[in-house]
Length: 110
Image (tube, rainbow, N blue to C red; front, side, top):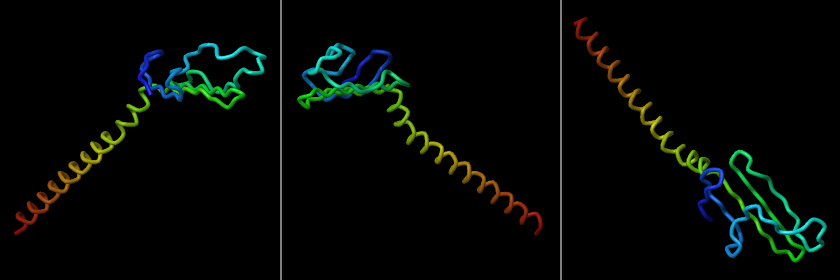
């Protein structure tokens, strides 16, 4: 796994530490019976994937994900916790105000 900067910061995961992440180099020629079968998709919405399989069974794959996705995912829990804490404080403050009003009303009726 590595942190790369191509079209923006991204996390890159790949299976071959000797070769490194696939970056668009030529891995075979069209029509070559010993060439790899390639699958994948380009940089779509910050996600890039390439998978190559050669006739001998060896594979090379690379997955690149824009850093914005893990950052957004990591921010969900803290933001959710902050929203819940704020709602609890507002509810407690509202109940305190209501209790004060009730106590004030009973004091004036006496």
